[in-house]
Every structure is written in C-alpha cells, then in structure tokens.
Image 1 (cartoon, rainbow, N blue to C red):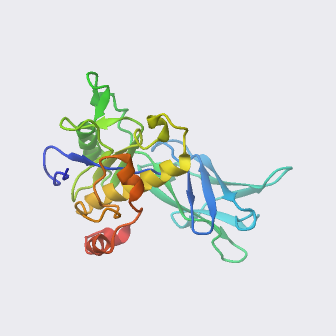
Image 2 (cartoon, rainbow, N blue to C red):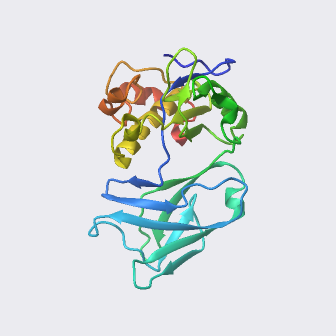
Length: 270
C-alpha cells in the first residue's frame, strides 16, 4: 500500500524499526548502553557503557577512556574491583532537556583511538501513552492516530522522528501494519509486535528481532525522505506484507534507491 503524502489529513502505514540497547559492528562485538533511553526533561543520570563479544576483539575498558555525547566529552568514571571494569559517564539534565537522539562514542585519550561502535542514545518524545489510539473492537491501536500525534509532537529541530512501540497497529482497510510513515514528511511509527518470534508461538530470538526491525526502520525512514516502494524484493524499500518477505530482504537500499536518497534534501545529515 502506498504511503499518503505529507500534508494529507490522513497518513498511512508501511514498516518499521528499532533503537536497540546494543548494536553489532563490523568488529564483531557489541556496545551496550544502560539505560538506552530516558524521558526528555528529566534529571541528569549516570550512563553505563559496556562491551560484549569475543575477548580477543572486544575493547577492554581503560581509565583513559572518555565517553562523548554528540562529540563532546562527559565526565567519565572508571572502576574495577573483582569483576570486569566499569565505565560510567555523567549525563546532565541539559543534555536531555528536549527530545532527540544523541550520538554516543568512546575515545581513548591516551592514543586518540575510538574503540567503540558509535551508538545512538534515544531521548523519547512523550505522547502520554497510546490509549487514545486503542480500538476495543479490534484490540489493536490505530496507527493513523499515533502518527498524527507524532507529526504534531515532532521537535522543531528534528530532521525526522521514528517512534517505536510494542503495540499491535492497524489501519481500517488492513488486518495489521508493521508501521506507518508520512511520505516526504517528518514522522513514522513502528510496531515490534509482529516482528517477534513469540508472536508466532516460537522461542524469542533477540538477534532476529533486531535484524527485522533494522530493515523496517530503513523502510520507514526511506519513505519520510520520499522513497516509494521498490520492485527489488531484496531492497529495504520493497513492500513487506508478511514476515517471510521481511526476512528475505536486506537491511540496505538497492543502488537505485540509495541514489535517489542521496538526492533528497537533508539525507546527507542521516
């Protein structure tokens, strides 16, 4: 189903994504943030940074490490007792005063080398729950209502806003949707409900969930930059109406869609 264009009074679905608390990089290890999100406008907090993966490749915390928030250093504390070393950074209330996304990286001040995978820390936009979108007859949540709220609440300085929910979403003409995007607009919403293996009565698989969500995040974000559905079934912009189609496509745009994206205003900032 094609997304409705920005400026229309009604907005439509597509597919969706995830900001994970950890992300694998090409080096074969993960960088973990705890917490991974905090409410905007809250108090300052301590951000714990750790790594998982092969001990031969995963960075080992050092006292010379500095955690950076959007490229700026934050007070960083190194402790080690009987267990693994611990790295914590002081994040101030001013850092999270408004909703948005912060880039987290770790620098070794002794060598100048960045040992971490760059991660995104999400400061959520509070839309006061999703009860306003609940349809008791369908026992699902109307993605149109959610998306319209996101459009109104998108921060003025935000390029795009991608919301992630565990709620099962729908639009009136479809049984369910994986997500919903505003074509050429600023907002999109994602549902993880049907991306989980548990939905199909199978054991949970966090890695598979992340892969599925990443593909659908690219899909939705592509729509906000004006990309339409792609005929290449392996492209992230291909339409997915079932989970098998999601699993078969790549977490990347095809050459044609990537070229179109590069020509879109603002795409270079992503």
